[in-house]
Length: 326
Image (cartoon, rainbow, N blue to C red; front, side, top):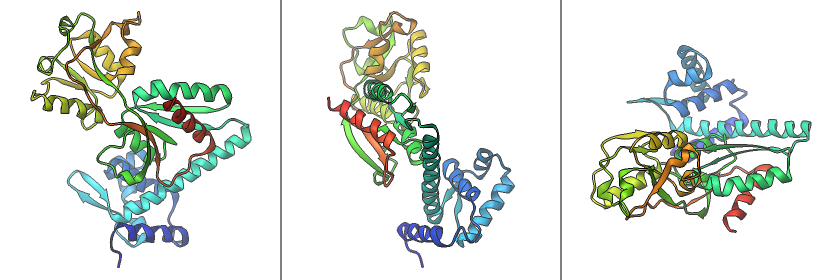
């Protein structure tokens, strides 16, 4: 009898290697498992795969008949994978990662290109570390293809686990198991508040926490590390949270809202310095001096545990690491 996820994972690994495919497990079955893991609803998983919900339900029944164990269970807001489903999903992600890497290697051999890299980064390090490293790599290896996603750490870490990135620059969210990752801390991201030019609070030498709740705010989505850091600053000062909040992960939309209203937004200091007073419409943004600091935990280079970086990705990884220590 199985006891615990470790035993389930071990059994699933053995079955995948010795019996599941011979028993009828197909690649499309694995795609469905990953879609369920990503969307947590059978209907949404089916939509993402372009199949009907009844077809997805039949495929799920096929998988459970092959594995001889329940793969998912219903919960209040949809479905969750069982320990057997989680073990199968984990192995499936590895299979698809290896297939992707095989396709990438074959394409590089055919074209003689310098390879490709997929990188995710939070905004500040993306500007001051990733951009200079990308410039060095592109100059030295003009055939290389580099894909970059700028987003918050909550999104990026999940993209990394889904094998959509080779590595990321960010932080491990508190709700994810840190054992799934390898982290090398490389720096601190300074955060500031931005407002439009002519904002009433700019008349003060520096704004205090009690001056801020009366204005609209533009925040990153709930649960993100930057948002929580700002909320903690309010709580430490004994100040209520703003009543009107606009949630967006888009830096461009944030800047547009701030420029055209009296809203306040927390952003990486590197972003604020890039746009403030640069002579463009975006330059109508100003950094708001404050009496308090917004502290956010260090960021680092993050890879998935047990997943080796291909040579092109390792090159960019090493250059970012070197850049952070310069």
